[in-house]
Length: 323
Ligand code: GLV
Ligand code: MG
Image (spheres, rainbow, N blue to C red):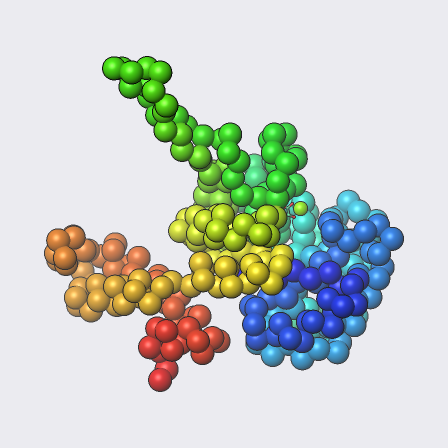
């Protein structure tokens, strides 16, 4: 999970050390959500956190203001030059095309050279304009600095003139209705709510895999509705995303639960891999056909479990790895 915090808020800054080791990534947010009069304070808060907190295996990222804003240049300079190498990834919002990534790439390179930074700063772009979605493959392939993409459903909905007023998630009116019963045309008909974000997430996943980078679902604004949050995250997970944002501590556990395979899924995947021997041919297991392609799917699950277990002792124990 990418856990967002407002670095302009002193109380939130003081909580950062307690989140190290609990979340995968801490994101100091300088963009939307930070009031106009606190943009400089947010940037200073990022630098303070970066230079005073020991992040261990948790990464520190920052979401800078967009390239067309008056704050972006100073934000990127602070992240690259003033944060003593502590920031791993810059999140660029409202990316429209590969030209935005090229521009940020060259700018970051200049600042890296100036500061003597030895590890490359990576870029994570937010897909939150229609033009960005139309150019998603070129964006992903625009620079070796590209780490991944997040869906930005709130800005994307506004930019597309979708008629929603929410931050991510579904809408009760986006539905299909079952056909009328010919014997009783007045009988109530079942309706099924559809996922507003299916198309965009699927495109994002294909573009990211093409470029060898990682796709994430973004924010889910209804903090109290952890059930719907888990559903939205799970749809993204099943389609190929590796994570999501958490905007509130209550969403940390939701993201961890959804984006980590269950012990039963891992056990099933291992069973198929074992039963398939060298991985070729076809067998029947519990009445189901397994072949080279199902082994590959099972390997995705087993490899994910191993990656998660490498930094999370709780998951390592759940999957029976390393003990
Ligand atoms: C995130 O930034 C969004 O606009 O959804
Ligand atoms: Mg946004």
